[in-house]
Amino acid sequence: MLGLDWSYEAIDVDTPDLATFLSSRGDEWVGFSLTMPLKAEAARLADFVEPQAKLLGTVNTLVPAGKGEYRHWVGANSDIHGMVAAFAEADAVRVGEAVIVGGGATATSAVAALASMGATAPYVLLRDRARAGALMRAASRMGVKPRFLNIASQEGLAALSRADAVMSTVPAEAGAALAARIHESGTRVRGVLLDAVYVPVSTPLSLAWGELGGVSVSGVRMLLHQAGEQVRLMTGQSAPVEAMDLALAKVLTNS
Image 1 (cartoon, rainbow, N blue to C red):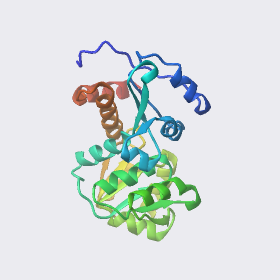
Image 2 (cartoon, helix red, strand yellow):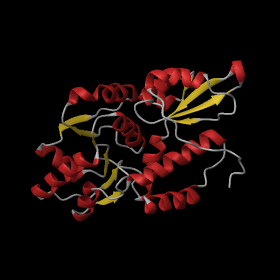
Image 3 (spheres, helix red, strand yellow):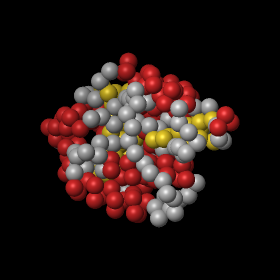
């Protein structure tokens, strides 16, 4: 569809081996998608990091510029684009109150995504604030002022009920525990929830959110749009998002 005779494959690389792996690749390699735990190391190794990714300190895309001895790696973060585009599918484009559930690398990207949508003081729900150091540093660099609440607190439930947009970045099991607490408390919600989990497509949290008055967006949509942005970065062409959507749906149906 793009007119390119390229292949895309999964390769397991441990964090300590990433530098050697990159240096051993020839000029035929046109880019890499990176998942955890490689994102911080990729940001460190990149010769140039796009401004937003640099603020976050995480890179999920590496694209070469130049060839041979003149080649250098450009780092970017397509997760932000994926989140913003997924929220937009549910008409959540400009938001006031926002909540992030979790405090890891994906939550750090959520800070940037929600800030670009207008939420510059999001609530962050988590169990241990000490684990959110990277998020706090990135937020400070962006001029965002997160407000931290315990995920099990009444204040956290109140924040969820008021939120225009909620980004959940916790595993499905933790999301299920939060869903049970929301149900038990009788909390009603009204905003849009994007759950980063994409297997299963519908999580206990996303199902509960819909039952309690909100709109939920599957993490599959975020996955689709961030991948589309990676295609653009690697090829210089607009991604065939509709065709990618059909292919993704087929894979999920057969899995």
